[in-house]
Length: 113
Image (cartoon, rainbow, N blue to C red; front, side, top):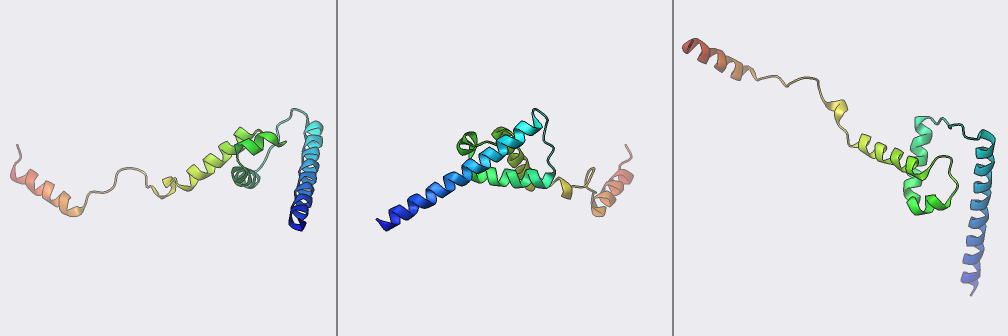
């Protein structure tokens, strides 16, 4: 019984905190109006990671600074960038080994036609 009462109090406290945060976000959105909020990459990264942990359904119920789809798109880009190895690629074609080059030249000299 005591555990149930304690859990209920904790849940109620969490709901109060969430309502306060939503009210804060609403006040900021009213202040900025329809202007776009410019976030830097670190802020986007933080929001994306936190939002992914919450999930789309929960994000739709919360007040957010940007739309849930935008936040989750940021997360997809972060994941794609993590597994993208384009920084390790070198431009152009890889070199042909010298043994192969020597063999081609040798064959060309032997058979000029």
